Amino acid sequence: MCFLCIGMAFSSCNSQSDETVPSDQGTISLSITANTAFTRTVSESSYSNVDNYTIQILDDAGDPVQEFVYAEKPERISLKNGAYTLNAFYGTESDASRDGFYVEGSTNFNIDGNVQQVTVACKPTCGKVIVNFANEMAEYFSNYSVVYETAALKAAQSTAIWQKDDTEPWYLKVDKKGEAVKATIHFTRLSDNKSASVEKTYTMAPGKSWTLNIAPQDNNGDLGIQITVDESTDDEIIDIEVPSEWV
Image 1 (cartoon, helix red, strand yellow):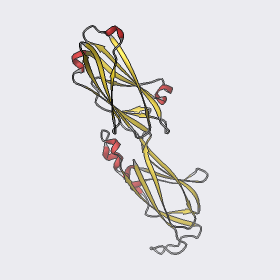
Image 2: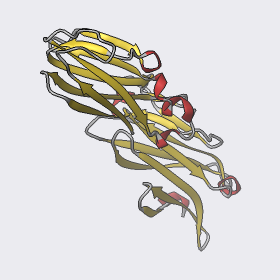
Image 3: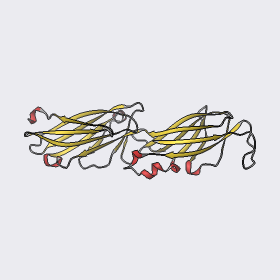
Image 4: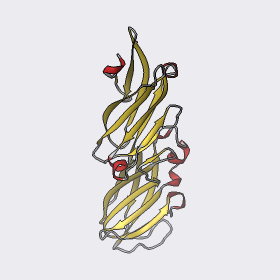
C-alpha cells in the first residue's frame, strides 16, 4: 500500500517569495510516503522510492493540467479554482508477471480558496501467489506443477504456470472487487507414471497474497497430497483425496 499526501495552501496575496498569486488560483505542495511490503521479491527499493512515482492532475473535463515524476516536482504548483482529480502511479500492468506489477491511486479534490489536505491511497492492481513444494515431493512424483487461471488470463486465453522448480512469485491481475482465482495442482506419480490433478479456488483482491504449501502424505500405503493454504492470517490444512484408481 502506498499513501500519497498532498498539502494544499491557497492564497490571494503575496507568497513568501513575493510572487502574486491571482485570486482565482491556489497553490499545492506535494509529499509522498510509500509502504510497499508486498514487494519483497521484486526490487523493493523501486516501489518504495517515491521519487519514481508519476503524478498526474486532471481538470473536471478529464484533461491533464500537470504531469511529472515526483523526483522532478516543482516547489509550487498553481491551479485555477475548480474540481480536479489527482492520480499517482508506478510500474507496468500485466495479466501475469514475475518481473513487477502496477500500483495506482486516485482521488478528487477542489481548489476553492480553502486550505485542505488531500490523501490518496495507492495499491497494486494484482494479487501475489506463491507455491512451496516440499522437498519430499521429488521422492514420490516425477512431475508436479500449479496452473493459475484468472478472468484476465482467461480473456487472453492464457494461464500462469508454477513449475516444480520455480521460486519466484506470480503477480496476477485481479478484479478490483475481488474474483475467484483457480489453481489446478497437477502431479504425476513416480512409481507408475499415473497423473492426476486437484482444483482449488480462492477469492483474491488486489494487494492480497495466497500461498500454497504442498507436500506428499502417506495414508497407510495410500499416497495422497496435503495442501496448506496460507492467507497470511490463518492456515487452512486440506487433505486432498487421491483419485480412486490410485488406491
